[in-house]
Image 1 (cartoon, rainbow, N blue to C red):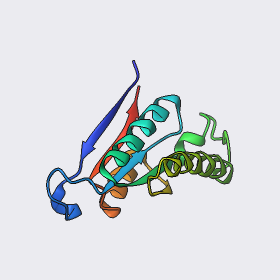
Image 2 (image 1 turned 90 degrees about the vertical axis):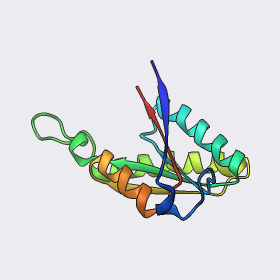
Image 3 (image 1 turned 45 degrees about the vertical axis):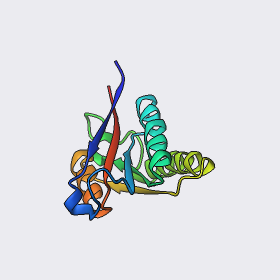
Length: 129
């Protein structure tokens, strides 16, 4: 089953009142499940006149095979991720949503939590299997 999750950030961190959404963070791995989450994030940003921040995290450990060889180099993965994030930004901008993207390297969970705080997002949206 594919689904998506929406998590509200602590409003005291973002400076917004409860119920106001000014910044939506979409955490995406560019999979089909994340594509559905992207649709939801764009719709949420549209409905609230909010900015969309598209975040994709490169996990260097996930690029290694059991023997230590790399599936792809980090620069190759970054190119793929940037292109995918730019495509989501273009989709959002096409419907009038202000959108930007970030590409981080590291542990995905830690990176999503850190990005949500540093970007002062009011809501985080991500896909799940």
